[in-house]
Image (cartoon, rainbow, N blue to C red; front, side, top):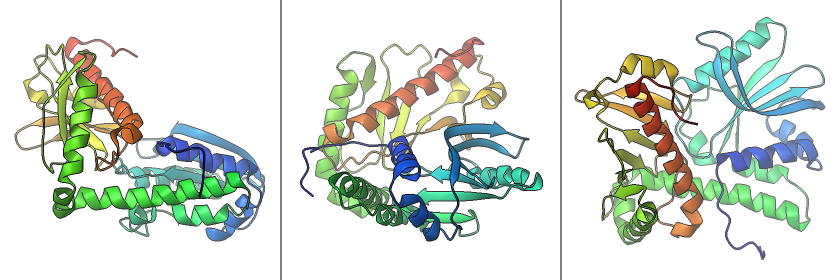
Length: 311
């Protein structure tokens, strides 16, 4: 499709908003989508984005897209572009839906994601699943804007397939080692240009990138796994004064403590990054990942100092 828009980086929340826009305003989209998921047609009362609820220790968490219909029924929708699930995320969605059901509300959990992502998910984890390519088909307008939105969902499906294949295949990364080397060089130049970060010059087909704050009194380092969509701050057991149990209880939802036999990590979910692409195309995802890295480091520093982390 010919377009004046030549480059567009996008992340999960961009697709949240595209999907919400189509639900609310897309001509024929709602009816097509509800047919696709075998959910009888009804009118929408309200759509909410990024709704956090905590009913009890099991039924808590963020619902990406909360849809309430005029008849009271609910769809609790999780959108996954490529990042891994958080711990017990599907179970917590299901537990929240059960709370609504016990109060007399029809509630279903829904996962929307690229097809390759859905292929890795148990069919019993979610009440309803729908892939991005099916969502694209529900956008049935023939105007330029509708065609463009369809292409975004289809492109995301293709990108997720490429990144997932790279994440699980050593051979695929070896074949792409030249592109990886070029991407890592650009990443290192970006990370160090303001003197806020130091980064190791890494080569070859490894699927990680190592960096640290330039000012780093705790000696912390970030191991970023771009294809898999997460990063780790390692060796927390070496941080003097750090109360691991207290830190665990105060972490935001996308962060978790992972205990390995010889070390303790703080892991954080990040956007996936396609390091075989042009760096500028993926720069938004790189910068968001490094913003999350900064937040992770500040959480550790604040816990070690016994203070609240900076916003």
